[in-house]
Image 1 (cartoon, one colour):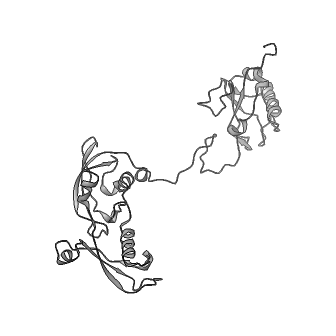
Image 2: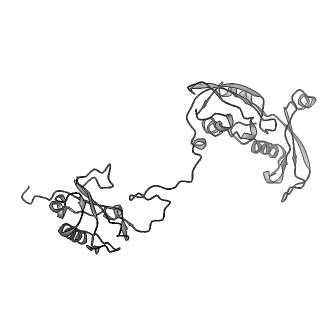
Length: 295
C-alpha cells in the first residue's frame, strides 16, 4: 500500500493493472479486511491481508461475482523508519483524531479516522512535547500494526483550527456588518472621493458641536457645491443636515479614520438620525490652499 494516496484507490488500481481490467470504484463494494499474519494464507501468498471485492447487487455495475484479493497493508511501525519517530502536532490537538488533518497536511498522508484508533496525545505541562500511541483500526483497508511516537510542538492546522467558516461578514465603514442589509448610502464611502480644499479656512474655523444657524447654512452650501447633492438645512430624510454634529476637525489620521492619506486635514461630521437617505459620518478632507505667489 501507499502512504500518500487513498488506500482503496491504490488497491483498485493494482487489481486493474495486474489483470488488464477497468473496474471502477462504483462497480464494487469492499469487505472488511482480514489480518492473515501468522496463518497459512500469509505463507502461501506472502501477504498480510485478505479482502473480498463484490460486484453482485451493486446498482449500475457492469460486473458480477466476487473475488478475494491478497495484499500487504502498510505497517504503522514502518513509519518509524520512513519519517522518523517524532510527529510535529499543533498543541491545540488533544487527540489523534483531532490531529489527523494537520498530520495529513504536514506529511502528505491521506489518513482518515477509519484508519486509526483514536488516542489521547500525552502532552507535557507546557505542550511543547509528548507522546502518542498510534494503533491501526482493525478494519482499516490500508494499515495494520502500532507504534509509539514522540510528539513535538508543531504548526497549528487551519483545517482543524478553523471550525467556523460561515462568517457574519466584514464591517462596512459605517459599522454595519456585511451580513446586514444596507438600506442607505454609507456616509463614509460617499464622502471619500471629495476634495474640500476650496473651503479650507471655513472648515478649520468649525468647532465640535451640533450645527445650527449660519454654520449649518454654510455647511449645507459647501456640501451642495462640492458634491452636487441637494443638501438642505432641515430635518428632511433626504439629505437633511439639521442636527448634524461636528465630531472633530484638524489634522488627518488615515490610520484611525477612513480617509485618504494625501489630505492634511479632515472634518468629521456625524449626520443626524433624521437623515435616512444617507447614514453615518461624513469625513470632509482638504489640504492647504496653494499660494499663488509661491514659485
